[in-house]
Length: 337
Image (tube, rainbow, N blue to C red; front, top):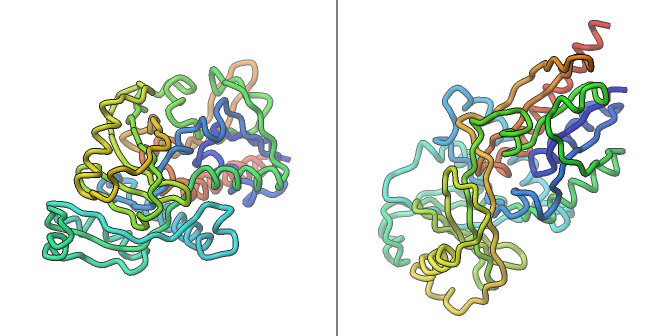
């Protein structure tokens, strides 16, 4: 029975763990993390499924496009099933706007999302939106708190174990586990010494505005994402900012920008805010590695981290891919026995 550890309990870690269980039913899978649920970065995410291919390095584009397709198939099928409410998957329509055309960047999403179409500049002007190009579509929004709880439940029901522990280094797991799936996000800076992983600070404000039913996103990072119990308003993207402080001035700026575009938000009750550090990298680290752990022997590692702001969009699909890598390591090890 293969002993497999998954390091990290955010969207990527949970998705990877559940997919490993599906791929290798006889494996003993354990999630190890020091942050769970509301303490993870992905728990505060807006969960807006919007692959933006300009953010994908050209050498990874084919692989990441497959992740997007796998994620879309999974999320959209849940959103149209009796499990939709429990899993936190909802189909929501809305518009994204720009002052330069983005046809190429949205080609992949256009092939997946429902009723994808361009919006004319005249229509945007009638809506008092001062942008030249718009795209409307229906996509999946993942309410991450529900989704994390559901994935955790599925993982436990399949016999998975969870350990709340802060690791200093991956090497600690040598001898205890045969394979480690490393989904530690920004923790890779310390856990595996990967200083090329960097934070992109995000700040979101939550308001009570049940009359706002559609998503909206602009090129200058003004966005509205409706959840069942709140409207998420964003946002910021501050590269290499390690601060988790919710700055009052930033909160006020986020609200003012949104209210300028949508005056009906004025007076909406602020019910919360979130600050998180998106775990970014120039390229997602997705590869296998064999670590020499001295007297403890060698440790097989599958790395799957550095998704930045695409943690939900890519998370399930990269979990499928990581499970395939783990399966390959298991079958390769058996063939050498």
